[in-house]
Image (cartoon, rainbow, N blue to C red):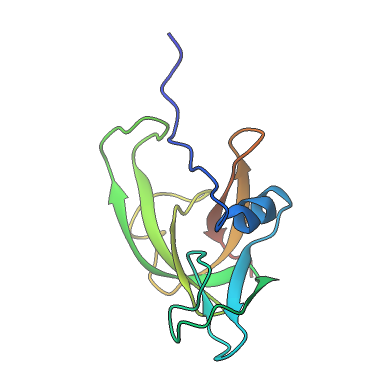
Length: 136
């Protein structure tokens, strides 16, 4: 019997640009054309002022570890322990993700440590943006 897989997100018309970006190795955010606020998750209007004129742009993929928890129980598609993290991007928005390619310990996962995006292809439709400790 095959090992259970991680749940797959499903693209919607509002999120398709984001998932197209991750497949292309880009972290795409939206910015309001009126108040200039960058935001995540994707939606057709600005959460700050309600304006519907928004622009999709390529984010830097850099940020810092804002918060996390280390999960120790088995969940399909994950090998414990693993981090469930919130990363604050350079552009301002925060996103929930996982920190990978480092020990999953409080000593290694320091709040405010710099991180950068790493893309992990799950299948032909979904590539996830995960984060790794920034080099240098």
